[in-house]
Image (cartoon, rainbow, N blue to C red; front, side, top):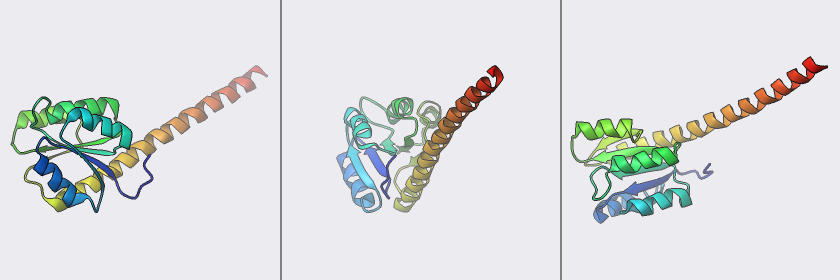
Length: 155
């Protein structure tokens, strides 16, 4: 888990101006990584241990939902946020069902709303990791108790 005091956020968008604007708006508050290429973005998630992914829905080659679907499969703890400039109900349903998104945000972006949302998503990310850690701890303890019980029953 990231011990940084700032969340690691990846923003994927095919428009360079949007990437530059996102980086300029949020670089003081978060560790920002940007990409205009889904393959590169996926690599960044792994290398940089990204905690939150923000992606545009409409991109050539791969939609934001398709990208988030692969992220959800391979990095289930990473929180996923979809940006859409279109009020497309079908995309929103796909995002929830396939990409397991944390939130869907309509463009144009409200800087304070995005900041608040990223902080919420980071909290959710940390809670998800802690829950899994506690479950693993309980499973280990259960195995130990079962072993001790078997030993007691055998003696």
